Image 1 (cartoon, rainbow, N blue to C red):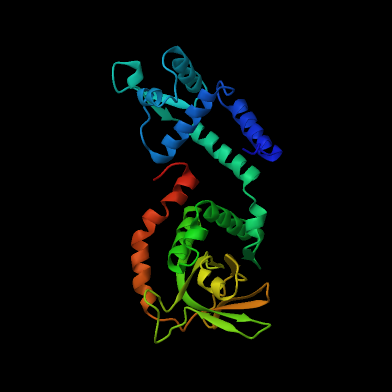
Image 2 (image 1 turned 180 degrees about the horizontal axis):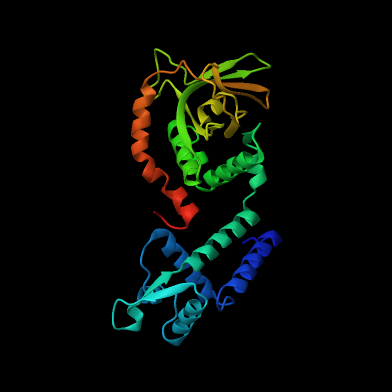
Length: 301
């Protein structure tokens, strides 16, 4: 069996150091196990009983387990809710302070192991001010963490609805907008029409493309997976551009990405089938957005 690399051992040491400095009795494995169990309970909303934790060997029985619970209570990380006359019948309730600590660990984890820069090279963000650029990068990172970019990257209707809801949760105005996009390979002259109205479509295909408009200033398109297949992956995973709000213009936005590849989003020329799909996805949105809400707020709403 290969021995762990120096880098992996350094990572393990960093986690141990982080936990031991922040958890009550943090040098013990029992303290780490209880922290994990409380974090999971907070995110799932499932009640956590001392009796169940002892049965799962998360907590030691008797005085060691009682001392650990007392230490977590004193640190403000859990509260007890009595459901029976015996001590082992108590429910362990995560506190807001524990949720803050879980969020802090999440940031520590992402900063150490997730190579943000490597993924962010797939984001094309151009022409935005500093605040909107920061919002776009944050949405990109969060959608990557929630697996939306891989799960919905070829589904523009679902992706754009998720983006609009995520932006609204951050206090912005946001809506989805049907359109169609023209991608042109500048060197070869080849082009691809994404979502333009056509008399014949494949089963399940809609004759439109859908983007997200934030604050009537920014066009977000995180759903061009179909076009990436046509251009050997040269199409970005996500695009953020100034939105041309003037209804008299033919395009919503225009850009050139590496390749070079020109992309234009058009206001008119898509079909009507998209509206039925938009209505259907709107009904699915509360379930689809739940992983994002859980990540944003620390527990499902």
